[in-house]
Length: 193
Image 1 (cartoon, rainbow, N blue to C red):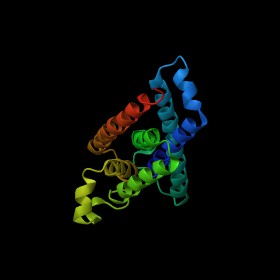
Image 2: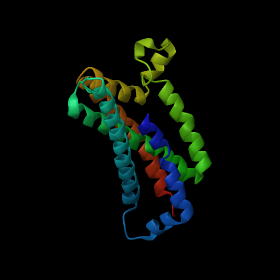
Image 3: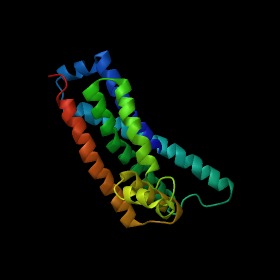
Image 4: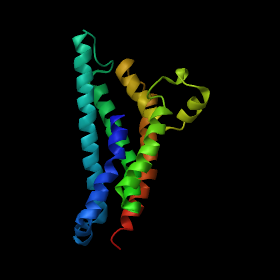
């Protein structure tokens, strides 16, 4: 949830950079345009990994206070959850950046990002296991990338390494990232022309 919320806000910084004229300076600088967007996405990913790490650290402290082992997969699993959260956040940042680049408007970016964030969260297995969901939500969750991330993370924390779920989560992130960040790259290339 932290990654998807942070990713939905990624475009706000892009709008601020466009409005302040910072992007105009990047466009005339002797650097590759793709490095500007790649740098922004890398910074977003590091920020999201740090946020996920803090939340996992707090969770570990709270479970240790009750004399329970915090993660079924230990430190390796916690690192994989952090990596999954950051990768998904970077993938989902593409939507926010695409809208920001096309509209150059913070309100429009916020409206589109938040309009998709909550349905993706609540129509996934992030809140409840799939068996507890109504059938129509189960059907939607089968194509919802948030479900794949939630299932893999839940397994890493509670039960152990399910390499099938982990692989599916990374495939979902890759597919989602290619589409959304591809749109952002196209919108970014259209800037400054």
